[in-house]
Amino acid sequence: MSASDTYYRDHWARIEPALVPMYEEFFRWQPNMEALIKGANIVPGVSVIDYGCGPGFLTLELAKRVGPSGHVAGCDLNAAFLAGARTRAESEGLTDRIDWHHTTDDRIPIPDGSVDRVLCKNVLEYVPDLATTVAEFHRVLKPGGIAHAIDSDWSALIIEPVGPERVSRLLAAARPAYRDPMAGRHLYGAMRMAGFTEVKVEIFARPDTRGQLLPVAMTLVTYAKQFGQMPENEADAVTADCQAAIDNGTYMLFLPQFLVTAVK
Ligand SMILES: C[S@@+](CC[C@H](N)C(=O)[O-])C[C@H]1O[C@@H](n2cnc3c(N)ncnc32)[C@H](O)[C@@H]1O
Image (cartoon, rainbow, N blue to C red):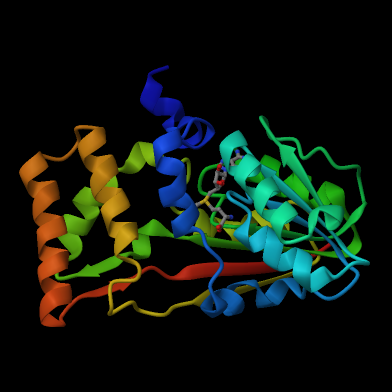
């Protein structure tokens, strides 16, 4: 097995400390994410797992919504993210209603049938085995509980003016960074196979024309260079072309999000 075979996991488990602030900025809660989590129906008093919570910005938002009678568990593979999340929860006075779990394998350290909601945003493309993780969601939920997963399907990525051929080459070059780059389209079937009864899929699609999602394209460029799968000059040209298009108003990036809501 080569290092790139488990890169999809290892790069999250061992983020260089210098890069943690960049990720924290990237994963900040934004009000325009409301549409992504709506299906989870987070109401006062419910218990929620935020699986793959990262730096915990969404977790804190959930903790505010469940109120003092609710509870949130943030689980993540990265210990540095969790340390920052814990500090932020303390400074916001939310410690009493959040537990943080450092998960190092597929298992969620929560008893069977004990939570009302599992929310999982942009994580399932990285897990070692989608079916196993979704089965864990089913296991920890109470009967009637809701799993709500949000994920990309990278094959649907459009970056203009980069064009489809170069985007395909970029995705191929960045491939080791994802366990399942088409997780988005696989979520529906995975939820069905895990035994969920009502499974609903929606697609959230809002093209970015101002450069807010440019870090998505830049992350692919960084991976492509790092894996040595794309000539540096070609990767750098993607960056330059995106920047020029933002400057002249012709840029557009489109990465639909698959939202799957499933009831146990
Ligand atoms: C793209 S980030 C999303 C973070 C957060 N859910 C959000 O949307 O802001 C992916 C997160 O999944 C975590 N992750 C990746 N693989 C994981 C695994 N196997 N188990 C738990 N967390 C994992 C990473 O450490 C990272 O925090």
